[in-house]
Amino acid sequence: MEMKKILLVDDEEGLTRLMKLNLEQTGKFTVRTENRGTHALAAAKAFRPDLVILDVIMPDMEGSDVMRQFKQDPSLMHVPVIFLTATVMKGEGNLASSGAGGYTFVPKPVTAAELIAEIEQKLA
Image 1 (cartoon, rainbow, N blue to C red):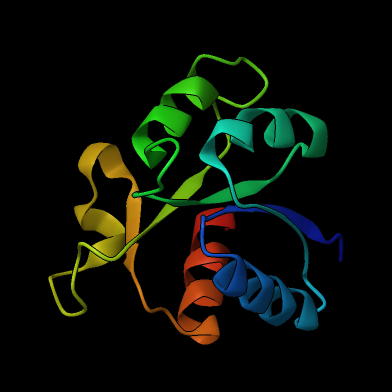
Image 2 (image 1 turned 180 degrees about the vertical axis):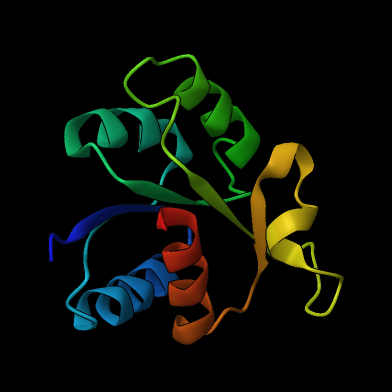
């Protein structure tokens, strides 16, 4: 099975380190992390991810602005995105389908098992 490439963009370095470790331990994913929203586009162009996990609220650039950059780039516009957010609480409906524009919003904190389930659903 070919390993899927995941780009993880979140300003919390401890979180990205832990999530990278958890995802790579499955043997299904190669993960690149980026802790600055302003660097996300360059990282995505260099890494060519199969999926992006993107924090909504970051100090240097909002996740929605990063997403707009991706949508303007022909090589990235079709890459699925899962948004991580502390602004949606667990239990607020079916998060995978309730996102604006059909995007998936996953509440923080998220367990590795929950995140892997969302990734596998998006890549199916």
